[in-house]
Image (cartoon, rainbow over all chains, first blue to last red; front, side):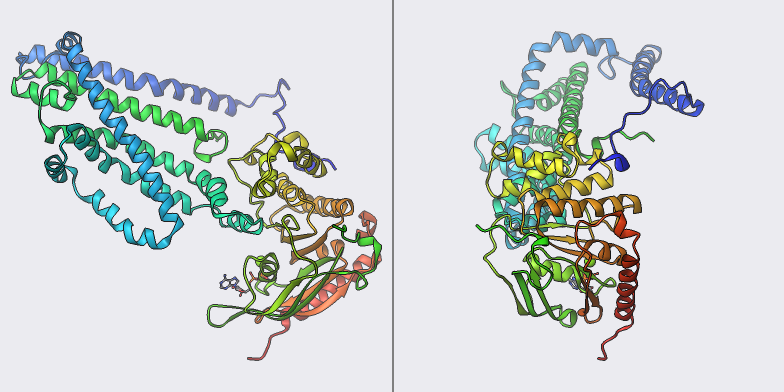
Length: 291
Length: 267
Ligand SMILES: Nc1ncnc2c1ncn2[C@@H]1O[C@H](COP(=O)(O)OP(=O)(O)O)[C@@H](O)[C@H]1O
Ligand SMILES: [Mg+2]
């Protein structure tokens, strides 16, 4: 038996001398687009910084209202020991909350798919926890929880776990029904079905939820720090912003803000990368098409 | 365990039984009668086509035999107790796991039996060789054409050397050329491993070319109205496809199908 009639993996004939002008134009466009993707945003940032600097200088704005970009950079370097320590604290809370959100979200989702009754009983409460603004729950949490770190973790977790829970639940339930039948014909146990069918089916959904949760846990950590509001050693970036605000140290506010934004970007980029690496071999979202 | 009879060992009707459906009814909801009073004796080595218009209960009958649902009344009995790997199915969709390679997909029935990949690697490669895809064992399904995916699905069904293979319109979504080829191949494979096949189709040509028994079904309510025999011996090839015998059988099956489409139960 041969497979000549229905091949799928034939390499394109190379070096045949045939050239399609339209194809070449398309390739050129694609390359330009790839370069533009990086160059254009960088250009916008540079222009914005220059404009900012010029506005401050030409408008004669005092540095305690709007510092020049150079001053922000200098503050970042000067205050680095303090800010870096705070960055570590915020990062710790964020990543810790994200880790608990992953464990809790996936664990609950698995529990939900094992029993419709459990899902019906508890899903509404997950929704309630999600739709209640964290700033309104946080003060209560800090009253009942003694450890500040634990309080911060709980707040960040509440914000972050829902996208993981709801996406993973959706993913676990979206396993192809023909494959479900096949597993049944082959006598799969509940555990085998979960392990070999439902979890892999849920992976793309879970990763989508994870990317959202990464950003949210940073937001949760920052908001919780604002609410907790106590200073001293072991304070995160949000507290540095508050503190600098009281002292009218605007450059430091900008420096801390810059660090938070960068942290958010790095988290999102790493989770996107993780997602790409895990799905690139098989999932449509990670496959580049010709057209 | 005694191996099943090879199809060429005995004529249709004289083969030892594999399984029997008796007075099987299947009702969905309150009043959708998908099957009424279906009797079917399946002999070892039979190649049975279930032929009929859509909605006549072909898939329902297959799901009942596969144990995916249960008769509302009547019984389905295996002559010998069914064990792991005795039964396999091929559906209209190739139904592959997109996250797994071709070899891992074919490994599935063994994996669900709790066996290790290394222990069954030879069987997997053998099955892939049978369908001509041994070079693609590490490819992912998305890299394959529709016909190749269907071959993987068939390899997965063959890999446990089942006694009964259920196929639900496996080639309906493929183009004519691929379909002809796969029809030839499925017969060749069956010669090699000698299993019993129940094949659902709504193509008269396919049913005549492939099977030695054609069970014609009608809809509303789903039921068997005729059974035809195709006595042409296996192996069958292009010579059969162009023969007068084939044309006559197709005509007879078409007549029966027309009758099935016109037939309505008064109720
Ligand atoms: N799960 C189900 N629930 C309700 N009705 C069904 C179900 N499965 C099949 N049916 C009905 O049973 C009849 C036979 O369906 P099916 O066996 O799929 O036909 P075929 O495969 O011959 O096209 C149809 O009328 C169909 O609508
Ligand atoms: Mg059907």
